[in-house]
Image (cartoon, rainbow, N blue to C red; front, side, top):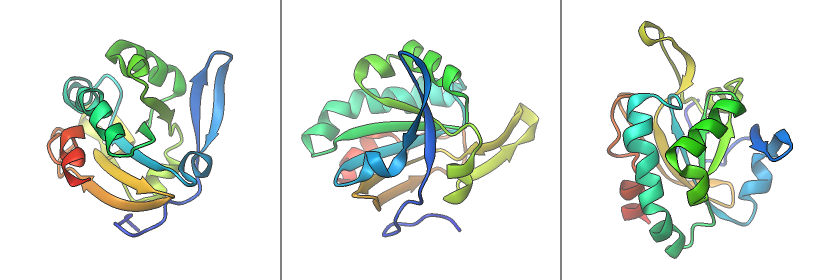
Length: 162
């Protein structure tokens, strides 16, 4: 089942690289009583993710916060070591964007956002999307038709919906 506006996000546990190594992050703890933006990319360091999607949320971060967003979370089906390196390389960590690893693709599959692109080696990856979540409930959802596109899921597009 694909997640829709009005749905509650399922329980999920991610991995985040911390000062002492990888640690678990319970999604419900991030969402309870908070307004959170979650955006997902097919892969860290992949062309559109690196040059368009992540930069759009770095640019929009202050304006999203001004509209009441408590946290911006980037999710990818990559290991936490890659997510840390990508967060450092893009400036996402410096900008205050949370980088969460869905390495086993459990969350991505649970919300119906998984896809395969075998010709380029992407297996069980996430579709490109952005969503606004208020206290665990999806209030806005933007899913790209193609993993190489970043228009309706960009930070500025989500900002315009709030």
